[in-house]
Image (tube, rainbow, N blue to C red; front, side, top):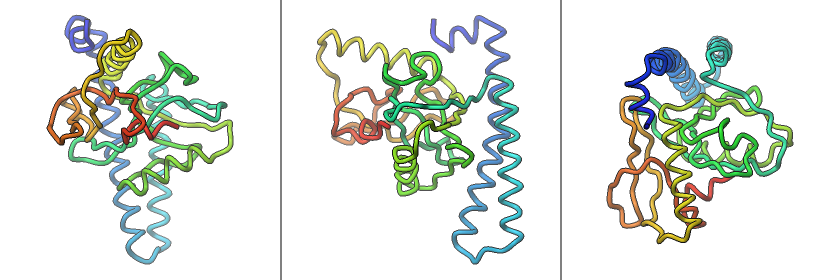
Amino acid sequence: LTFAGWHMAHPLAARHLKDWETHHLRYSRLIRQLSSQKLEMDNVEDSKEEHTAVFALRQELFAKLHDMKNHSLAFTHEFTAKKLGFSLALSRYGDERNIVEVNLTKPNCELYPDGLKPRDELVAIEEELVVCHDSGEFNDVLQKIRNSPRPLNLTFVKGKGRDDAFEKQEAERQRKAAGHAAKPHYVVFSAATPSDTSDEVINDQGDPSEHAICSCWHQACQSCSNYI
């Protein structure tokens, strides 16, 4: 039974989804405000008022994340291994903002299989909120994680459709382990919007298709090269 089917069949799942949407809407609004404020500060001379506004937004965001943790919608984990065992991708959350989300998880991840799943959003590294406007800032995030000493605290917001994404990842992994022929090479292009459970992706030939995750595990894949 898929997440969508379970959602329809179980009122508890429907309440959980509604809870996620309510909290995530508030979080997204705050992070958009912080992102806009950060861009303004990057483009003009800093002022005391701007720094005060950013500090207030950060405090409100951390308070919101704490609230989401109390509702089991977000979590922080202290990673001790140098290799964390998952990959990240810069994706578009609808028309609202860019997000750094988990693309694939591997068995060597400390939170595999139940803790961390594809579609979860990385929101903080230690006490620093993750705000990415472009691929350059995304690469900075990757390097910061790789170069930071361990233990390292990372905070995630659970993503919509994470259970289905994990099941598809594991099904693909099992097919490859069994020696089945590999599917065409796909690279994640953008994440699903909150109202859509499919990702828009492009393959090597640039043809649009719909796949939940990049599951090729090929070293030439940009998503796979983002393993940390």
